[in-house]
Image (cartoon, rainbow, N blue to C red; front, top):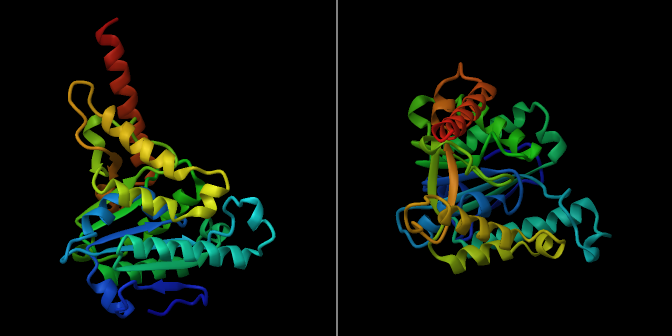
Length: 281
């Protein structure tokens, strides 16, 4: 793999070559920041954890230098803080038994701009991994960098040959829940297995937790809440759910804009709410 940036980090926990590690991938996640992978793609991590014929690979786009810092890290340079966050992500890959972990080391500001280089990098990763299942940020996410990363991923996916497009492409919740999606559009991904592993993966990122962002508590709580409030007339289906959106139609239909795709979801939600109100008015 030939990346133009010198700060790209390719880590393979079991020591295989990067190319060999990527070629065995079945579940891939491309996310914006360190710890986003563990928040949005835990169902894939859990599925591959003890599976001999399934391997999870994570990709983080940004360098993490702009993340919230606790007092003891305030004096670190951007490069030093990025190195610290990179080491946490490597640790998560070891804990989760990932097939590989790639950190591209882009700045958040560069990600928010047009970049053929980033698109080419993502295209190469997609071609080398050829996963069955792909986890991405949702286009309805409230975080600007998450949306920018999603758009870069979409551009790369639309350049793939049809035979190389993943069979399942999920847009998952991080900043903002997807429980508002109409029932027929909302996909429940099971995040209720290996709860100790799920918690351990989140606590690896101590820079964020100590800095005042309790992603560990918030993430586990939201997954349980999603399961509990998924159906008012049935028991909880599991100990945790991550809501996801099927992105395959958006990838396959090059004429469909992201704005139109999301607007259709909003319109369906609006119609569903109005119909429910009118039924009892």
